[in-house]
Image 1 (cartoon, rainbow, N blue to C red):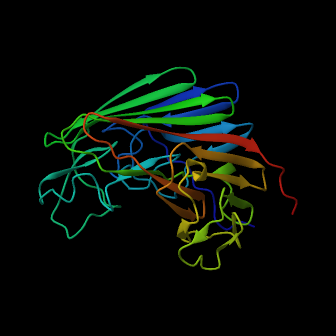
Image 2 (cartoon, helix red, strand yellow):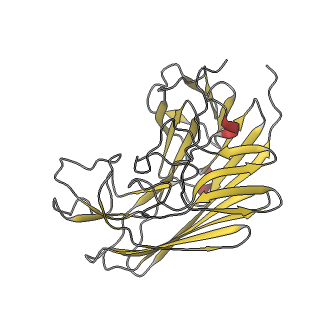
Length: 317
């Protein structure tokens, strides 16, 4: 029996949009500096999926017990974070009191502090300008930002439903005079059928992963699969970097299955991995693939991630 109760969804007046086709339906929170569901300064504000259903299965939803819109990880769905080294764009060159950039968030104020605090909430000096366009089965977000000091970009993210798949299409155009050196990853806050994280969950990779740190007897790797030895309780997490992938884009991928219900998803990307982190808590499972997204002035870089939903045969226990 699970002792980790499913969280109660936060009730907000945040703006949302819904897209759907014959198979998939998704509800997405819209970026909004005053009323948005997520107003933290860690993750890109676009593409925050509050719910996605296919064939009676739920893939994304609230995984955290308490909610504050400015908390760094009070967010849902396949969301992304941009990093320059282990900090943010322009952070290293900014003096205390100066500014730096979080792509998909805005221009932020740098306080007097010894180092960048990835999970902190920084003051937003300029949230940039968001525009949104929507069709029946797609939605496009465009974020335009210019910090006035050499960093400027247009970032476009489109969520598109194609058959039994969700496709994330990205384009980052450097409109400034400074190069944008960044890597980006998708945190993939999966909540398959709102079930707890435990032995019913399996994660399968296209290569044999190797964990960089002990999995604390909570999980283990067998060949290409990561499985759980027992159900994670509230406050317990599994965290490790994974090695073993090669230089080809074919290694950007994994399958995640909830074997008690049969919900499955196959994730693929079109860019090679630069690193791969795995994190999970009692109510979410998160393979986190990183890619390089650096772009010179006047140039555009683009990438795509596809989520193909399927149903596996439920395990008999």
